[in-house]
Image: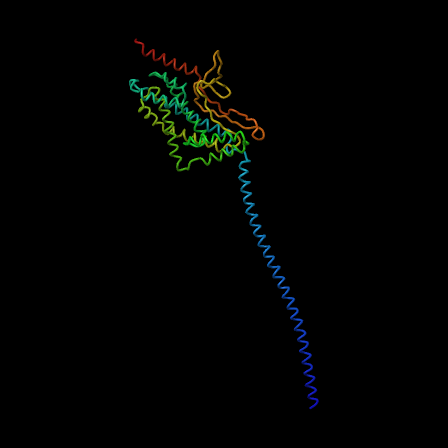
Length: 376
């Protein structure tokens, strides 16, 4: 029995030692778990920090991309100002103007061929003639007004053609240089600002500003037909003033011009094309259509006699009556900054009628009139 007790005691001692070993091992495992928990907490903290930094970097990246896009857009917009490449060449502009001058000549010549003075008593036409005189004075000036008021009942059709060409040429010159059709207030404001910029800014800036401003001042496409019709009516009114002043009855002049309404509308559209080309497509220089005023002296540098050939100067200066074709000047600033010098070249000379040609035509009219009035 004693041996059994001893065996049990030995077994108990072994169990106690086993328990002690297990407790020791449990403590070790608990310590390892604590270390692992600490490592896990550190790892979680580092992961959270990494996520925070990643989010910050992502936000910074997005901000950088947005800033890059903004700067790219700004540079692209600035490049528009820095680039001075024209959308069209000088030759293209000259071709547009020459085609327009040809339209003017053909229309005026066709109307003059059909023109015929009224048989009515001049006193009956006086009211219409006085109104026409004001229109012609505004459109062509006093020199041409005085010539047309000299008209007889057998005025040479060439004189009528010259007057109509001058009327059309002045219309083209004025309308092709306008900033915005139909608004006199904006015309004055824009011209004032632009003249100031030409003095104070570089040409690259002023020309690009001019091109963009004119482009955005253009009317909406839906409004263009009405504006074109208004301009055509304005031009027809000026031409009718010429015809009435040279002896046509007003209704007859209206009927005659109605036959050429398509031609007039075509001239207005071609004028708009010229205006768009020199105002919006040209950014390397200034393109300026011009005509010569009556009573100006002939200048071979920018004018060409409508009769052709050189103009010989005599004892008195050679005076111009009017322009029958629109000319074109090209101006460019040479040198850096606003202090650069302007260089101007005439690309297309304005064809002009000289005083001596008009005198000869009117003398022929007087001679014919005298011959018809002399009894046989």
